Length: 334
Ligand code: FE
Image 1 (cartoon, rainbow, N blue to C red):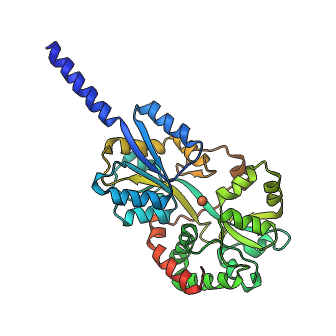
Image 2 (image 1 turned 30 degrees about the vertical axis):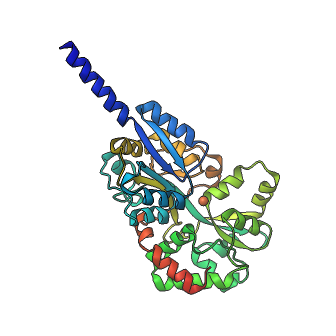
Image 3 (image 1 turned 180 degrees about the vertical axis):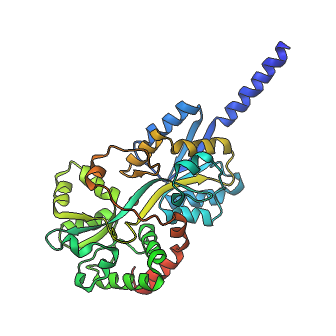
């Protein structure tokens, strides 16, 4: 009897050891993520093996590994990219009461989930424009702003997701009119990232641009004198407050179809919506938690204040992504 028990115990330990691992492919790389993962291991005993890389590289790797992929969970930023992983058939559906109750319905799909949100705001040069000139995304197409608009590429997921939301809210024809109007307002051909646009606005090279909030928050929190000068020159507007609300995008992830450690994967996704994890996850990149009851004390986000967010389901952003690219191409939004 005694012997039997210890064999059972051994078998259990062996099984337990095998299950107590999670292979995470992540396109996120923030310092606070260390604490986020360490806390999960402390709570569950599940060790995290992390592979970090660029979104495209990780997607390519998961695709190539196919059924032999060791990847359990894939984390990345932007609804358009998460949608791409979905379209490639990389995710497995997850049914979880925890995920369903903690994440608002518009921020989840059947197989991928949002864990934090960021907003796409209008940033303007206070010497060149007034906040009243740029209250809505549509205003960026107003001929009054000729030669004043700077933008990153129209093929970038952030801009594709923004135009997808415009297609969903205002229709294709209006979206194309806005895209064309924006192109004719360009101060220069699209180049660089959001931070480059903000700096060009502050330098007076352009009068206005659009940026994700965490880039603004990073500059706000920076102690570098040049960043502080940049912030003195610019104003930030929450677009579409009287209509659909400001476009928001997400960081998120899901369990992979060939995940060898499915139980651990679901546990990890559920962990990411716990109060502590939500704080680490969102605050690490100056974003907002998706769980509404979780409050983050972030001085930059507090300064930016409250706003009305567009409640468009993230899966609709994904749905119009291809259409958005076609419209940008037709409009000459390079
Ligand atoms: Fe970014």
